[in-house]
Image (cartoon, rainbow over all chains, first blue to last red; front, side, top):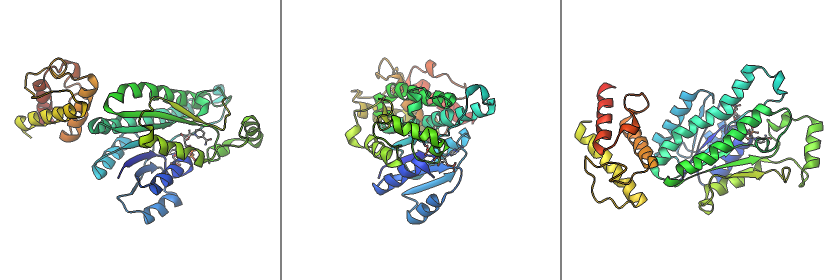
Length: 241
Length: 88
Ligand SMILES: NC(=O)c1ccc[n+]([C@@H]2O[C@H](COP(=O)([O-])OP(=O)(O)OC[C@H]3O[C@@H](n4cnc5c(N)ncnc54)[C@H](OP(=O)(O)O)[C@@H]3O)[C@@H](O)[C@H]2O)c1
């Protein structure tokens, strides 16, 4: 059975990915800060061979390393890593305080970099692995009010490309998925006017849904995608086209 | 773990990479150069270090105790881990 680590799997997109992977026969290890009803129910429904969850603050780099170590020791393998954890913050750069800037960089960038470093060591040893970074369309096109968030997501795309070159020789694929605006807790931060504006500009006339993204995650984990690496795949209903 | 076992662990993983990457190595000697004799790329060296870190639970290169670019031969690697294990 394949073992996939998913960061931030308690709600939103991470929850959707965890549910989908469990349904398709993967074992899943995930973390978040709080134990949601979804995590509780999944722990009750699944054996510990299939599902593992831990409460971790994603900016605690040592805790992330221990998490990956624990997963590898428990399952004996890490086949895939989905770097999904992330937060957004809304506001003009000049009005942001430096603590908020640092927090965004820590969670959206440093945290996936460090978790990837530990997981990639196991993948190098295995001679196989799949890494998927969840970035965003705002890392590709400019959007006012999200400059720091954009910076972290563009950085993840750059990380994806160079890491794909670095690890390809050991059969490790690294890709990014850039969703458009989705109807999650994070997406709910959009005001009504902005929401309408985005829908108007989207050829497919709606916001994204978690289900629009999970299929691509599963595809990238599958054998059918074994020759795809170093790419950022945009799923946004055509907003950026 | 004594030096002999460490040395064998290093050689076993080199042979594992040899098989996976089809490098055509028939035997690993102590004084074989990883790059010149065994055809190891920096990625294979990184894979060897990752494997040893997991197996021996030490990483001599993370603490500046040893410098990875100075590791030329199989013996250099095995000795770096022996030293690290003895002082940890
Ligand atoms: N929603 C969108 O419109 C959108 C668009 C493009 C890209 N994305 C990206 O998609 C990914 C998922 O977003 P989402 O909308 O699903 O977000 P979400 O609904 O806010 O979920 C985020 C997940 O990460 C966990 N998390 C957040 N902060 C954490 C921390 N400090 N430490 C540990 N875990 C933490 C959350 O659990 P806890 O709160 O319990 O810790 C939750 O499980 C993010 O990388 C986001 O940037 C989202």
